[in-house]
Amino acid sequence: MSEQAPAGWYPDGSGSERYWDGAAWTAHVRAPQPAPPAPPTDEAANVFSKLGTAVKKAASDKKASKDEALRLHEERAVAAGRLVTSGIFGTSTIEIYEHGFVRVAPGGERYAEAEKITKKTPYERLRSIAFGVPEAERAHDTEGPGSPIEGAVMQAMSGIVRGGKLLTKGTAVGIAATGVAHLASNSARKSNLVIATDKTIHTLTNQKHNGFIQVSQKEHNAVAVALVEAGNAVLGIEPVAVAQPSISAPPDAAPPAQISVAAVAVTPSLSDRIRELSELHREGILSDDEFSAAKGKLLAGL
Image (tube, rainbow, N blue to C red; front, side, top):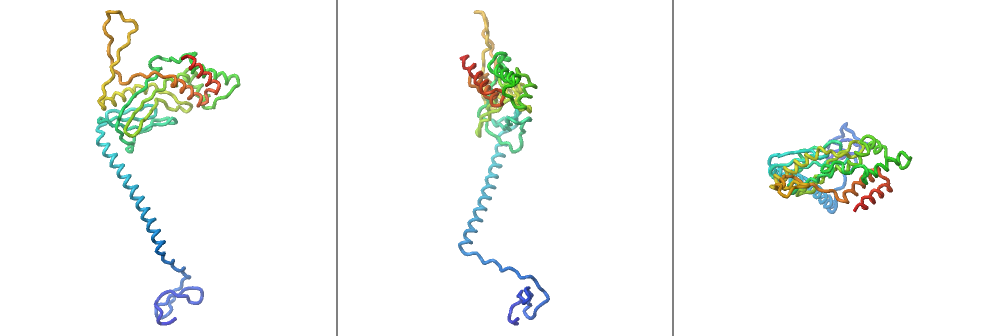
């Protein structure tokens, strides 16, 4: 090795590299090292630079969006004011705040327990809140024996006894556990709580899944009424005055008393009845023929 060669690693002729200290070989030996990669061309460097810039911008935009959402959430939390009331309706939890805000944790059809409000649940500005009272609350068991729904369920049950079309195992057990009359009227006891906000419209029901079928929780209807009263109060909406009906009042009788209600009862329409039958049909309780026969009976009553 020339004495002019700078210090460094050089092939020693034996397949290895030995360190030259600038004056003599040392005892330090290593395996041959790969050649360093060639520096990128101007075009490749430009592509990598743009890619890196795009990645950094995407990460920056994502963080900025997250920070903005957190800022708005905190602003709305302050604007909402104190919590007025909260309640569980079906599998959903609702909170109403004094300055016209609401938080909703909507449950699902397969939820057995109510969904909980968390610190991330958004504050939404309340626009309106209404409760649809089921007919069963106004006229107990109006879907009595002989009604299209119960008659259809009875036909489905008798089909099992005759060896006809079988229901699914879960549905059959559910019928045995709840009874045909209860199953037939359960859909009629379903009620809705509709909450409209500046973000979306929440349509909640008083039902939860008991492991076999959706079951209406009638006791939750009182919770819905209280939530409607609180919601209308923070919105500044006065309760609707409704006259107490009188079947046969004498000519000289006093005017009917006025009562305040938070929500007007909604009479289920024909489409509601057909929708109830459709739910039983979709769950496999009614066959195609039984569904068609029950729907025909409803339409015949027009």
